[in-house]
Length: 149
Image (cartoon, rainbow, N blue to C red; front, side, top):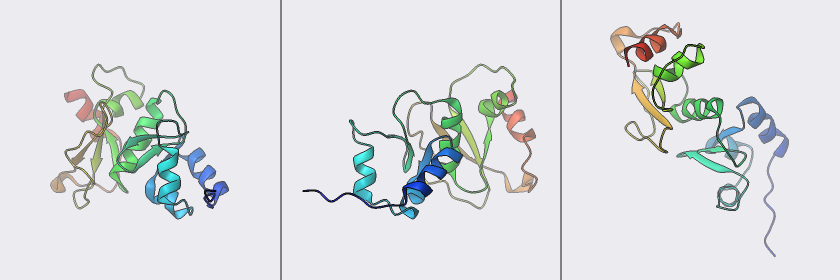
């Protein structure tokens, strides 16, 4: 008989609720979830789905824009911010274009797969220009990028 995976379900549920039901592999592992337990959840008949490499949605079904954006931010890492068309839409402005979530990463950070669009319309990382580095992190750059497209 297979052994049931033991992990901190309460902690994992808190993380999922705080992050629009999106969790990266590292956070699931920090809750004590084994690789096999995670793999079981993302199988075709499992209760989760893979959004990006190493980033998962804790439910099946249609992915919302908030979940897509959260997945892109978690995928890109600490210090990243939404930019481009997604930033324009986040600020309640209409903008044509694809559902790709462009993410700006700090100039000194490494995106796991910089040129990788993991799922159609998922996430693309862009490195912030070190000459225009700002610790303020405001939305102006993202709105400008979206307006230019």
